[in-house]
Image (cartoon, rainbow, N blue to C red):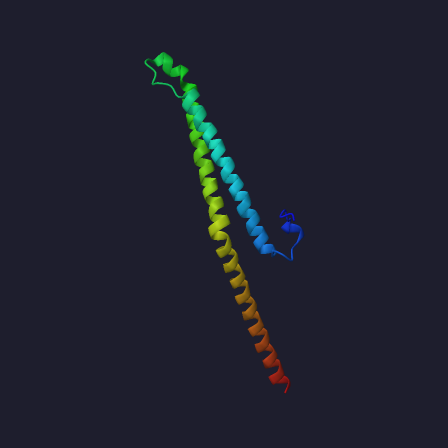
Length: 130
C-alpha cells in the first residue's frame, strides 16, 4: 500500500487551514535548508580564497580591496537573509495564529454587535406598530 498521499486533492482528510499551515511550515524548512547551504558556501569561499594576512604596505592594501568588498557583501547578505528568516519564522510559527485568531474574534464581535442593534430596532419597530 502506498503512503504517498496528496492531501490537497483530498480535502475531507485535512481541513484547508491545517493544510495551508503545513504548507507554510514546509516552505520555511526548505528556506532554512537553502539558507544554511548558501551561508556555508559564502563563508567557506571567504575563508579559503579571499581571506589573507594583513597587508604589509599601502600597495598591497589597494590590491586587497577586493577582499574587503567580498567581506562586506558576505556580511550584508548574511545579516539581511538572517533578518528575513527571523521574520518568516515569526509569521509562520508565532504570529500567524494569533493575528488570524484576533481578527476572527474582532469580526465576530462586530457581527454580534450589529445583530444586537438589529434586534433592538426590530423590538422598537414592533412596539411602535403595536
